[in-house]
Structure formats: C-alpha cells, structure tokens
Length: 280
Image (cartoon, rainbow, N blue to C red):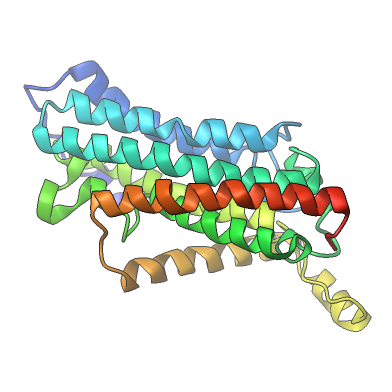
C-alpha cells in the first residue's frame, strides 16, 4: 500500500472524470462505515444500533455502487464487463449472506450486536442452534468469500480474461484504494461471522469445566475477537490457494440453485427450533 501511495496517478482522457475519481472513495468509505458498528471487544464499539445487523447489511452492500461507477466511468470494455460481473456476484451473494445472518437473528431474538454477543456468554450460537446454525455459518462464509472477490470467486478481475477488470484504468493511490477496500471487506466478513456465530469477544467455555473456564476468562476480550477473526481470514486465504476459479455461470448457479434454496429452508428450520424451544 505504501508503494502505491507514491506511484503516479496516470490521467486517462476518455473517462467520465467525476465518476472515475469518485468511485474509489465510494468503495473505501463503504468499508470504513462498517467498522463503527462492529464490537471489537468489551466496550470497544463506536456506536451500537438497535438494528445493528440491518445496518451492517445496508452499508456493506454500498460498495457495489462504487464498483459499477468505476466500470462505467472507465469507458473501457474490460472494466465494464468486470464491473457487471462484480455487480451480479455481489447482489446475488448478498441475499445468502443476509439470510444467514437473519437465521441467527431468529435464534437470538435481537438485532443489536452487543445483545447478540451477550447471549453467547455461555455457549456460542454455532453450538446453540444445532444443524441450522452450522449450515448458516458455512453459507455465510461462502457468500462472504464471494462478496470480497477472493478466489475461486475472483471473476470480476480475472487476469486471463479481463486484464484487471474494473481496475484496468486505475493507477497509483486510486488502484490501491480498491485493493485496500477488498482486504478491509475480508476482515469485515470475518468480524461479522465472529460476532454473530462465534460469540464475538466472548471466551470459549465448556460446561462443568470451571477451572478451564476461569483460565479462558483471563484472556482479554480483544484477543479473543481478533484471534477468531484472523482464523477465519486464514481460512479464506486457504480456500483461495486451494480451489481453481469458477466460471460465471457456475458462480451464479451455485447461489441461485443451491445456496439460496438451502438458506430459505434453513431459516424455516431455525424458526421451528426456536418455537419448540429445542436450542441449547
């Protein structure tokens, strides 16, 4: 990132200047707005909305507007195709990510992130909600991975097809802002998964193991949160290193034919579990 800060921004004559220069800022601001609502530790949260989950979903979906602006304003066929791919990908997988989070909202009975974490003080939601919680967790990780354009879902910037996708005409700091937003979004996805599924900054407890639980309580809440988030980020990197890139039709079929129907059935199962009181 430091190297990109000192590189020259090469002016392009055939672009829509206003949208071209505005797009990187739009993408990076959308990422930074999300950080304020994430509780990084006990009391380490800038603002705590009573509709925190909806706020995260709303703000995290703003980045696609900046990407479409970049593709359109670049006046380049590769940039436009990459932006259209990214738009289709983000809109599609945002549905599965949202439904996965709503599945856990059904379990918690609250949209406020601090309350969701407090309800996981004894047992994390991924263990409380039986199979539907595990399914929601896996689907959220897949959808989040696709939203951050990480391999094997990095179709918007496929080098062999689109040179660099919607980044093609950008250079210097502007190019770096897109990549910074991508890695920030990767951490945001891991942080949201940590908050909603893995207890946030709550330590790991085992029922009846009082000595073990007391030792876990001595570990600072910030270390718990970042430890879980970085573990999920490593999982994301491992998936990128392991699997080959999908085609665009395979990418969309995975979402609309499999993940979305499974998610809709899963949320109904969670409603049944909560109504019957079968959760731990």
